Length: 259
Image (tube, rainbow, N blue to C red; front, side, top):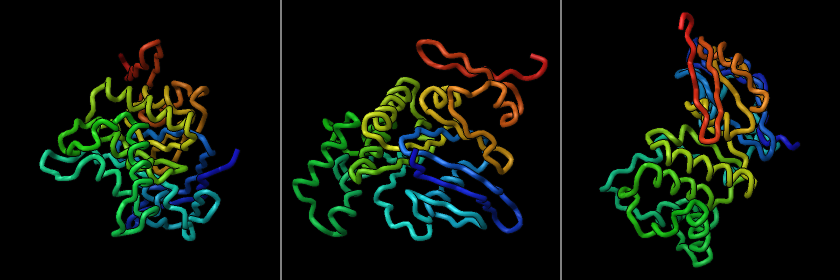
């Protein structure tokens, strides 16, 4: 399979304090990769490096076959942040305006949006089930609805890779399940490669096809979720994590010694 992300010998830190050290990592086209790990393990920092928002101390990154320093296809890369659902009711933009704001790569800055571009916006909103809300103020939507709008905002640029930083934070379980189903559809039906940071081990191991666990400055697991052993997580979290799947969802049971 074609590798769309390749990382070799990647290290990053501030001053003498290393946060990530000598990481190797790869993502193949069509993967749905979940990145998990304890708080402070460097998950968000790693994604910032992959987005070229910060520079590594050493090591190399390739995106879609190009060295990241020379990569010129950022319109093919989408990003949904953890804070995408932080708008309040006083924010004056409509759903359609928020999504249209990401059309600059197709329309150009300060150019009028044409009907063909409005169709792209409508199609993106329809894909995420939010087309009926296009004239609503973004601040009047629920957290889950806002996240869907921001995924639509990414979709109008027709990305090949989508990064998400804990998009389910602050939303209820039912909405979280619907969001995972949407991401699965984007991955399996449209073919978007997804790299997602998650704190929910149970959900991400059900929906992703590969898992990368970050701990102690390293990625210590990068394997197919079908082969994902419960015992593998002990080295990450310091205690056993047993995953029990049934027809509704996946439960996490953290088994501490003596219990």
